[in-house]
Length: 102
Image 1 (tube, rainbow, N blue to C red):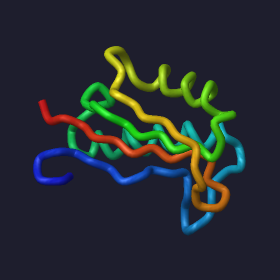
Image 2: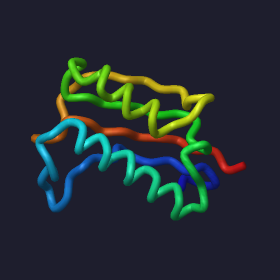
Image 3: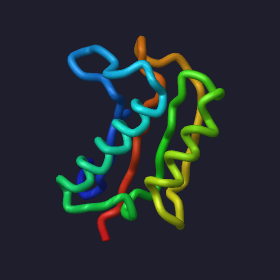
Image 4: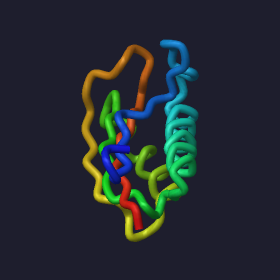
C-alpha cells in the first residue's frame, strides 16, 4: 500500500534468490497467483487492478503472456504496458500493478 493506493513493485517467481522454474508458463502462473494473494490480503481482487507493467525477458513471450493475462484478468482489462528488458537471472516475467480501493 502507498497511502490508500495498493501498489506493488515487480512480482516474480523467485524464492530465496532463485527462479522457481525455467518454464515461462509456470513462472507466469506463479506471478499471477502471487498478485491474487497480495490483493486478497488487502481484501481486493483482480477486478480492482487498474494498471500493470509487464516486463518480459524477450518479446517472444508476448503472445503466451497475453493468453495468461486474458485468463487471469477480466474486462475491462487493466491498462498495461509491456516491454522486454534485462531481468534478474532466470526470471522470464515480472509484473507490477496498481489497484484501486472501491
